[in-house]
Amino acid sequence: MNSIRYNFSAFVFCIFAFLNYAAAKDNHFITVAKDGSGDFKTITEAINSLPMFNYERVVIYIKNGVYNEKIRITQDYVTLKGESEDSTIIEYNQLRTDWIAHKDAIGPAVINIHADDIILESLTYNA
Image 1: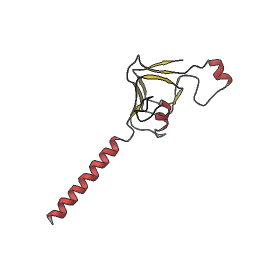
Image 2: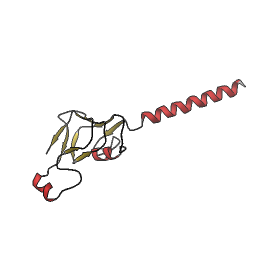
Image 3: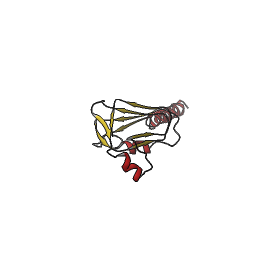
Image 4: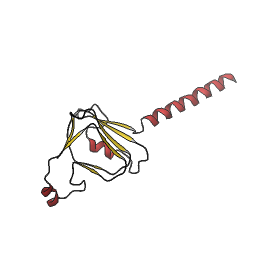
């Protein structure tokens, strides 16, 4: 009888350990690296992986590099955190007149924010 209790307790412990591990991996911290060493290679891929209705803070950690992309953030509670302000650069070269002539769904800026509680930290963005 004690053996059954011990096995059941061990089983319950394993289930809780797995659930805690799964919750920790539940997209609250995402790494972007151009070299493929992170969860995603582009910031856009990382943002697109988030649920539409996000109720908890998600940190997208961006490793050093020059990311040539235009970003649209529509989910709330997102932090874009660069590895270093001088070496984490988001840039996209597009004249405003070109965007007006050929509008896209992303928006005219390098970082287009359509959400609440967004934090941009330790990164540089250039137009």
